[in-house]
Amino acid sequence: MVKEFFMFGLFVLLMAVGIVSHYMTYNATEQASEISRIVSLTKLASPSLSVAFYEPRIFLLEHAANPAYPQMQPINKMDFVYAKQ
Amino acid sequence: MPNSKFSNNAFLHFLTLLLFKQKGKHIGAILISVIIIFLLSSVLFISASLQHTLLGTLEKQADFTVSRVEAGRAVNTPLSWLDKIVEINGVSRVTSRIYGRYYFAPREKSFLIVGIDFFDEQNSKALQKLSQGINLKRFLSTPNMLIGKGVQAFLNAHYYKKSFSFKTPQGSFKKVNIYRTLPSQSDLIANDMIIMPIDLAREIFGLGEADATDITFNVPNGAEWDNIIAKLHLLFYDVRVVEKREVRKAYENLYNYKGGLFLILYLIAMVTFMLILYQRYSMVYSTERKEIGILRAVGWSIKDILKLKLYETIIVVFVSFVFGVILAYLYVFVWGAPVLNQIFLGGANLSNHVVFVPVIHFGLLGSIFLFYAVPFLAAVLIPAWKIAVTPPKEAML
Image 1 (cartoon, chains in turn purple, brown):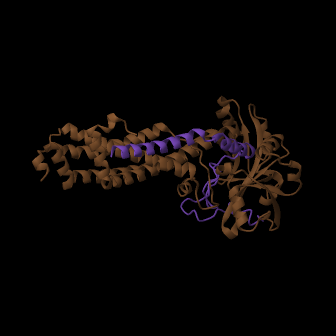
Image 2 (cartoon, one colour):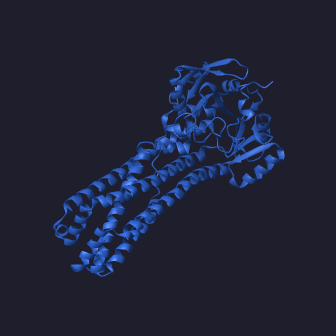
Image 3 (cartoon, rainbow over the protein chains, first blue to last red):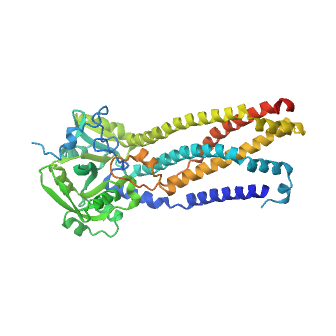
């Protein structure tokens, strides 16, 4: 059983080495620079939160109007759909 | 391959024999451990990766964002404020922004429209960098827009392949061509984003020429920040000032909170698991008692038995930890964390397939290992020691 045990140990080690090599060789700078380009153009760095229309999408600059009844849409959100008189 | 020293070791032979012969017992413990380690590591990987990426963008963000408030909610900011802010000493790169969400009522989805002044030199340069080889003249000659991957997928699914007609507050429709798609690497920020010329955004939102959504500016001297905030509050009484320090805190708190929530759940699961494990080993079903009793009867000392159980448990702990972490790494950084990413980024609007940048805090992984390994070892060794100290005859009964 010693042989099987060492084979299993080798398999676990190989998997760990695979993960470490992926981590070491991953090109993170390309993704970071693409995001930086978007931010320097728009000056908006909020993550693209997939939230409902009445929930805040942009950190700190948008606030939920009524957290207790979030389904009630604030009037100002609908301003552009129904023009102000 | 094992060398002769190892393969001739009787203890190692017996240990591996036990591990393989009793694999049913170990597989159960390994499976539960792997699930717990996998879940916790996945959550920590996602939160660390998001935090790392977002904090990396802080440098490019404006130091201050100023908007007008009315009855506690943000309203359009007059552009006349911009001239007053420019006059404050120590302020640079003052610019107005137009952005907002466009609600697509038939499907209850929304896009984030950002209007950019492309006649500004800095903005046109930033656009050239973002979209290599873009012909700015051609882009501005007709109503065009750049869209995020999520918007593209949504519009494609609704047969808006080349253009989309926005409904303006006046009730008319504004047809805007899809010029290009934003790179998929920027999905974390720009999945639901639409970038268009500022005048076009004004028209779609029905904003007046003298209005903007907010005003941003930089203050290079950090020591002046508090002073600038005080000046802004003296200049305008209906103003909300958001500074970069708050944004940093917001990023840290949001994901720490979510990570913390999972940590509590993990602790509950971990304690339950340890209790089950302890109960399982302390009740010690007859085979386990018999096994220890026989070993004691054939001359094994208490130390030898504890050594055997310790090595057996260390192997189980180590294997489950490595498998759990590897699975979590693959799930988050290779497969994009299919279900968990919705907890962090939401799933109510457009679907977002974010590629997470691998970020691992080895100190944190070490702590998880210790929190997991120490109670596990205790849960196995204490009952084993209790049996080992009883006379073999009693233990085998």
